[in-house]
Image 1 (cartoon, rainbow, N blue to C red):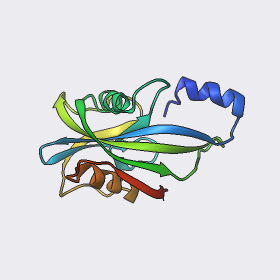
Image 2: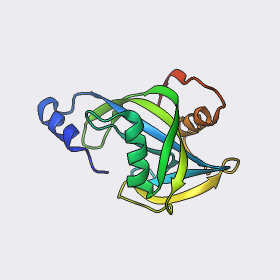
Image 3: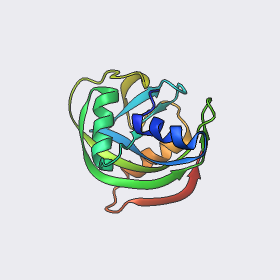
Image 4: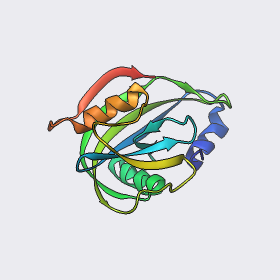
Length: 159
């Protein structure tokens, strides 16, 4: 997975010390189906997710990530949840935690296809027949699909 340039510049200054970054998860719905990607780093199926660039609105980041990773145009309908991950340690020793903002998006156009090297597959799945995936992604999907006006403030640290 490519590391954003701004993170590389920060790493030049802080080394492997923990960074707190903002991430976004995009749960894209088209009727009764959901768009998922198979992550290149873990092989897990998940909603599209990525790091928010400096100065970028998190909703814009969600839409951008969907286009980049899955070749699909989708628009944000609502903020669904805010959560915090546990600390990740990457193989090179870098340590990071993320504040994740999960959005529900509506499909607009495009053929779902792998758009970059962050995923190995992209596919639509019926809501009631999702492939196996880690609980943290299922929880984000559930929050996005709930019929509620406000966002869930999920205080459980995600693995």
